[in-house]
Length: 142
Length: 59
Image (cartoon, rainbow over all chains, first blue to last red; front, top):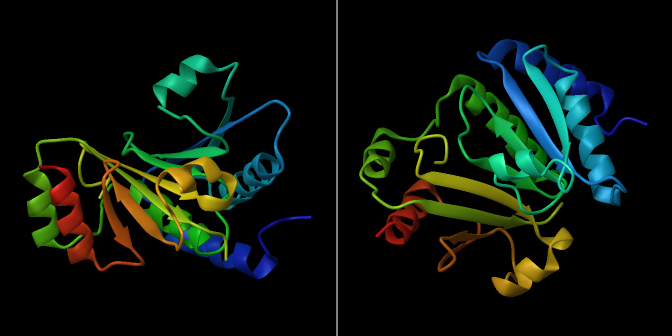
């Protein structure tokens, strides 16, 4: 049973074909005995990737692929790193359902474009920061 | 914002799956955004508010 409905899949396929500029890799981290959300997350990620030639999936095991876990700086599962031409530091922890699904799609597009979509004033302000900032946004599936 | 700067990284964390974190950061309502462990924003804040908090966290 697919997680993304037919109508939504068609709409996304079109959107991706319209918007995606550069390839995007969805790098997933899960575990061998997949927790319920890990399984669904992986299925969701694979369904998304099937909607565009520009999107690829890589799946790793948090424990046995320790090198990758370290490389992508992932500490919880399920995890999705949305990778474009570079690592922009975007991670989704937990299953991206409800509103977060939309956020994930938008992030895939933004990452593909390599553009944040922020206002000029915001960009300027961000360019001035000198310290790393780690943002964590807590959400619930709706 | 993570896309805009190499210094910024951003996580979406689904609260129900990680109760130890929701407890650590006192998440009662969502969305709740946490910047560098110490600065908080509740709700879907506009870009300007988000930026303000980010800059505070980057001091």
